[in-house]
Length: 281
Image: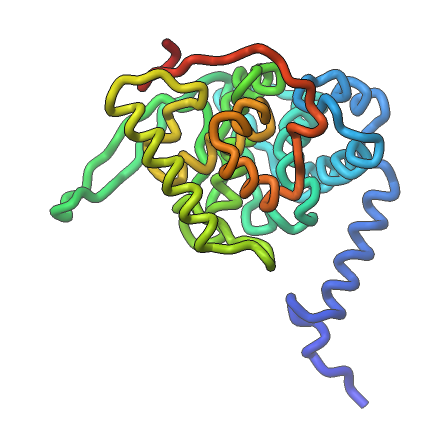
């Protein structure tokens, strides 16, 4: 009797079982060398992670490197340590979300430094314009993640921000169809609560930006709801106590979404950044 072709469908239980088995076999071979991994353990961004969490992060970073192509451009040459540095930062937000959280995109494009992006947009009357921006990172809808090597290297040591996590938050947001500040939520989370909490934070940050007021959260979050989510996500991991103090309801929602509590594992410190619209004060 012939085997039904249904068992080979992408979402079938049989395919899922085979995919998980192949992944376990790959990870069991310890594809990240011990010496390289030991270098990562000194990163301030990973401070407070338990032994079990570090093992989980190592597996996610290994899987990231296995499933994503990292393409250097403009003559840039990179080594295994830099590839792992990207992977570790990218894997941290999805450490407890499963290995398939980034399965809808394939490539990281790495520039030596900040790069110029030329993007098309349509205004309110239907005219198409080209906008040029100098960026340290960009997540393209249904496309690659673009990163500046200089910012990737500095990010794990920055006391309140992280460009890699910022762009990964955009990619998670885009799983809902577009980057709108509301990614697909887990069962048991409330979309109404999420939208209420983030809308309130976004309006408060927008008011601060418009009034020229200071903020401990980067006011780039006032650009739009998608940037609000991305900025709050990088602050959640890089400076969790700042976010918890400034926007406790946002912290709670990100705690539920990322299934992590960085404030509980990271020591509180006295660093308090002061942002004004357009940059640092």
